Every structure is written in structure tokens, then in C-alpha cells.
Image (cartoon, rainbow, N blue to C red):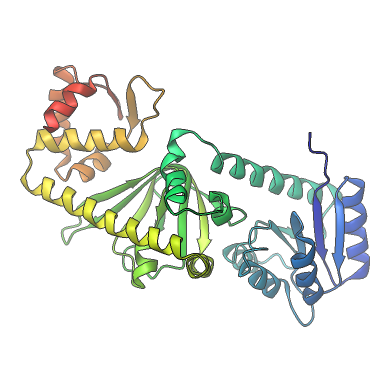
Length: 359
């Protein structure tokens, strides 16, 4: 059993506050390193490699924002959880820190309990994400194969570990078509759709994402605006990897760059094939293909039957047909013993018949 104490770096220019925080953390059985300013804090972070950093924002010479910015550009320190301390409570200050990648925010004055709970929560969240990313279960098989194929000597959590992970609610957007990208997104949990809206306001789903998938690398690699929008189909945990960190990895590892380019090429090919099928296949075949795509993306190998809760609007957008037409086709599939329908839930009970419909 590993009993090694967690190491915390405290960067605070007020000596009384710095000593007080250090004492609290030492009493909580943490190993504490302190730095009196931002410059010394950066040196300590790079040399000591702490498990977490607690940093004041308002400091002379180098403020907390600059400390976070510099450390986030270094792969050796970018993954360290970061908590800001500030005497300011304005929302714009909090938003700036969180958008830069801070994990949490404590407003002075705070209690001993507030400090300990914030740190404990960060460590628990960090460990949870790490455990999920290191699972060998099939939902993550594709991303594990990505690194195997690239012959990388790093694990998947080298790319994602420590970066800001956000919980995005159902129907919320990750990004909108036409905007310039500033990050790479990685799906830790949940389901995400990529879609476009035509001139008549009709939505068309062009891709689906599952845990283990990257989103938005196309626009980053092509240095252009997003060619589609991305929204969450069900509550999702998304790891946000800043654009600068993504390109730092690409520049340092040619195999990674090569593999992402292959992913880009394959993604375009798959989308083109789907468009061709939508243009020429019958409604029955298109609905069958959509259900099979959902099975391919989201069915767990241990499940006997595949079941998904998806709105009829989203499913019709995936098929590329009117909602009323989709509902009629699903009703036919139900009568034929292919699926069971209960509310928005669809359960595929005869996958073989579905595959025969696809042809």
C-alpha cells in the first residue's frame, strides 16, 4: 500500500497567510513546500513536481494568472491541479481563472475546513479521472489502440491528466460552427453529437462521440473555423486540452501528429460515405444504419440488448429525415419484432434483423 504523502506547493506573498496555510496542510498530513512569489513558485513547481498547487492571484512581479499560464505551457507541470486564492470575489475574476485552466477558487478569508475540503475534492476528482482514463474496458479500446498504433511511450493520461475537466449538461454546446478553436476536447464520459444546420433551420447529425473520443481536432489541424457544432446528448465529463498544449505535443511527437492526420482523413471518408448512403438508401435502410451506428458507438460488449434514450428529433437528425417519417419507421420495426419502444427509449431486441435491413 502506498502511504506516501501528497506534496502541495503554496505560492503566497503574504508571509502570515503562507505560514498559516502551510501549518493547516501539515496538520492534515500533507507535505508542504512554500514560495514567497510567482517566480520562486514556478521554480519550485518545476523542481519539486508537487501533486497540487495553491497559489495567490495578487502578487507583485508575477501574479497568479502568469504563474498558471507559464506552468500550463510546460508538459512537466501542465497536469498539476491548481487552486487559486484571492481576496476578490467578482465573477469575472473567477471566470478568467477557470477559463485559464484553474481547478478551483478560494476567496479570502476562508476557513481551515474550506481549504482542506477544496484540496480533498481536487485530489478525488483527479484520481477519478485518472482511474477512468486508465481503464482497459472496451469503451476506451479505440483510444488505447490510437496510442498503440502511434507507438507512443506515454499513456493516454499524459495528454489529458491535470487539464481542466468540465461537466457539460445535456443539450449544451461545446462549440459552434464558424468559431475558431482554442482547445481540443476529450470525452471522459457521456455522449456528444456533431451537427450542422441547413439554410432552412433543419439539424443534421454528422457524427457521434463516445468516451475515449477526441473532438475538434479537425479545425485545429487545418487552422480553420469549426465546420460543425458539437452538443451534448447526455450529461458528459469533457477534458479540455488547451490549443497550445495540443500543438506542443504534436511538435514534440511526430507519431502523434501523423496519427491525428490519419484520424482526420478517416473521419472525412466516413462522413462522405454516410452522406452517400443518405442520398441513395431507403428510409428503412437509413434508420437501420442509424441504429447500428448507435450500437457501434455505445453498446457495451457485456450487454445482451442495446438500449438508448434518445429524442426523436436527435434520431431523425441522425437519419436525415422528418421526425414523423422516423416515428412511422420505428413503429414498423416494433411491429416486426426488431425493437421495443418505451417513451424516448429504444431497445434493439433483434440485431440480426436490423443488419439484414442494412443489407
